[in-house]
Every structure is written in structure tokens, then in C-alpha cells.
Length: 297
Image (cartoon, rainbow, N blue to C red; front, side, top):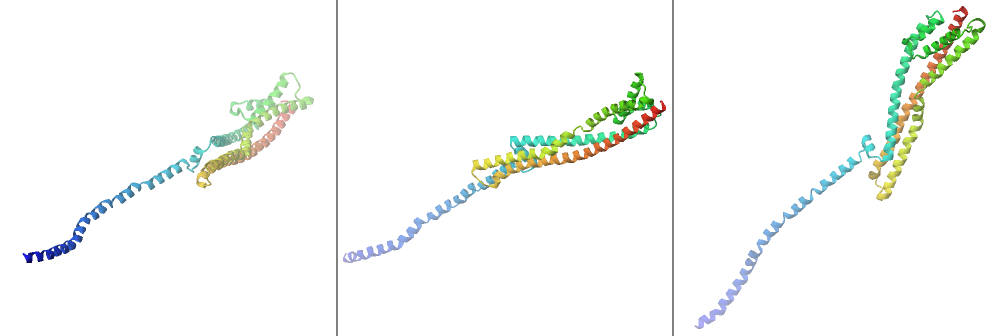
């Protein structure tokens, strides 16, 4: 019994030492599940990044929409322009269209006029009397030709004088020629009015077109600067579309004015040329009538 009592403290000491040695192992076993928890939560961060990833894709879409709304093509700038600038552009485009239509119309008119005048002169120079001149000039083939109208007016005046019982030859020859000249002058006045049709329009477009376009530009730029003040930004990407739209008005004004000036000068030359040709014909016509009066025809 004595031995057992002596050995009891020794056994208790050995048990305490064994418990101390085994405590860290138990602590490690208890802490072992912790890494599993961190591993489980680790993929959450990439998931959050993946959820946030589509955000940059939304920005290009907005940028694309902004570019679509402010397209810098001529049609896009026209559609995005303000009401005043748009009205200016439409007016200038219509003026340009009318200028080109007038160009084609008068080109065909002068071509037909010269061709018909050549045919009439050939027939006129074959006339042998004032009655022949009246017959040729009144033909349906030469209807509307200015030279034929002049010859018809002069010959009809001589015939009217005869029918009125007036002397058209001898000492009354000069008065007869004077009345014929007055009749020709009336036809020439109508000819000048006919050939100058549309010239005032071309002159107006050529002189006022650039200034009308400049008005649209000034108004558009003024609107752009007001937009700068309202948005409190100096970013050119914001105000550049408005300025480009305004400058387009000046471009359209020049596009309408330059051809109008060229057409005006061209047709003025054609009108002057035909006027010179008609003056030569008048001299030829009066000589022919004078000869026929001297012959008593």
C-alpha cells in the first residue's frame, strides 16, 4: 500500500506531461477546417469582378449612341441642325436646284433658237418681194423665232400702210421704213425680256447666297456658344458638332452661289451674242425692204 501511494504522484505527473504534449495536436485539428472556409470564400471575389466586368461595355454603347446622335456626315449634320439653320440650308438647296434647272432650260432654248434662226435666214434670203417675206416669216415652221417675228412685223407694217391707202414708195419711202423700224423695235423689246428671263434670279443667288449661308453659320455658332455656357464645359467634343453644322450652311451657300455666278456670266454672253446677231439681221431686213420699195414691189 505504501508503494502504491508513492507511485500515485509520479503517475499524475506523467499524465500531466502527456496532456501538455498532446494539446498542440488537438489545437491543430480544431483549426484545420479554417482553410476550407477561406477557400470557399475565395472565389467570391472573381464573381464580384465578373459582375462588375460588363460595366466598361456599357460605356462604348453610350459613346456609340452619342456619335450616332452627332453624326458628322452632311446628312447627319443637316438633321441635327437647329430650326433656323435648317431653314437656311433648305432655301439654299432649293435655290441651287432652280439654278441648275434654269441652266438646262436656257441651254436648250439657245440651242434651238440658233438652229431655227439659221434655217429662217436661209429661207429669208430667198425671198423676192415683201409679200414673200411676210409669207415666210408667218410660216408655222418659224413660229416663235425672234427673227421671223421681226420680219413679220416689218412686212405687215408695210402691207398695212398700203391697205390704208398710203404711199409706201417714192417720197414716202423714209416714213414707211421708219414705221417698219418701230414695229421691229417692239419685237426686239419682247425678245430682250424673253432672253433675260431668270437672269435676275441667278444674279440674286450669286450675290446673296454666301451671305444667307453666313447668316446660318453665325446663328449656329451663337447657339453652340450658348450651349457651352449652359453646360459649363469647354470640351470640343461637345460643341464641335454644332459648329460643324453651322459651317455647313456657309458651304451650301457657296455651293449655290458659285454656279449661279458662272451661269449668269455665261448666259449674259449668249444673250449679248444673240442680240448682236439680231441687230445684224435688222440691218439686213431693212435693206431688203428698202430695195423692194425702190423697185415698187
